[in-house]
Image 1 (cartoon, rainbow, N blue to C red):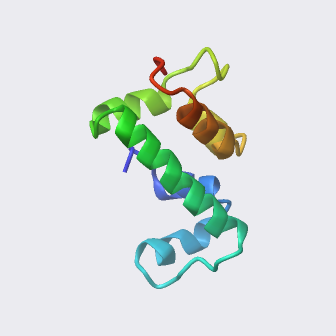
Image 2 (cartoon, rainbow, N blue to C red):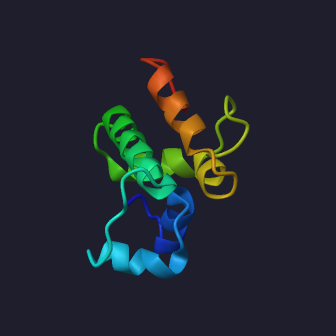
Length: 102
């Protein structure tokens, strides 16, 4: 999914890396009310907004995620992974309307 490795997904969700495999395998469920749960819900919003914008094209989605955006002063990937700014990226996608997001 989007070329993200499990450790990157763990960082986005603010979830412990050692538990991410259990989550992927269905042996662990995120608890409602935790930051990991809230970030997962936000990540789903991110994915859906990006999917809609890119008309479901995963190569375009990956390209958008990894490319630097002038309006964000960084790539969405690094904002989410290194700076914990998933919310900012979601807001950018959802508020851009029909404007170009490249």
